[in-house]
Length: 276
Image (tube, rainbow, N blue to C red):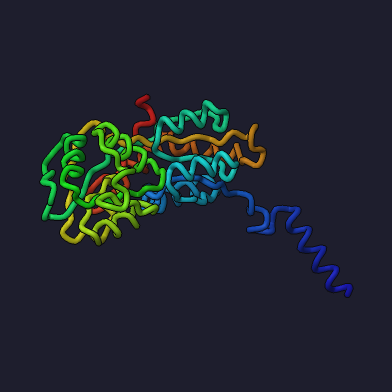
């Protein structure tokens, strides 16, 4: 009994002195609510080890659609929000849920489809005209249907085209309710057109006879932003650690890390933190 008490005392002493290893550092992590595109593309796997090596802070990513990520952050389930739906992000801050918002990086959306291209949209750069043509042809279109940043952008384009996709749901318009990678898998399996962010498309390994058919329209611009969840509203937020991550992402070092991330020699994201 004396020996057991001594060992317990020794262990407690080591923890108090900061020599308990993982026990002492167990709170040195943050939760980032983010999107499937940043995760599926491999960006986080590339940049987060750099941040951890520099600061000792582990970043745990919850990769869901932007809409769900924002809901999670509103519930205080995270320290940092890193998504791509600028109006929704600005509302998040305006509602007092976030401290402030900053641009981080951008890429673009594209519409991919099979070689057969039943709606004959290949080579078009007017995305609204292309989507109008897809609707008129009643060609299969696979949508994420998950309130993600990609889904929000897609719905905005259908609205501009004057197409009621809700009425076409279950017919030529199919909603997967899934992330970008899963939607690409489902869509390619049904020979459907798909709107995807370019980063996930480049990283996607099951392209088959699919290729980019519509690209280059300014309306396909895809901006990412980062926000610290408001600790005054959610006291559990690790504000200091979260701000360290935000500061690093927006720093020259973080921006260079993002720019250097490539797949098959192609840059997937383009940093623009200093271009507000």
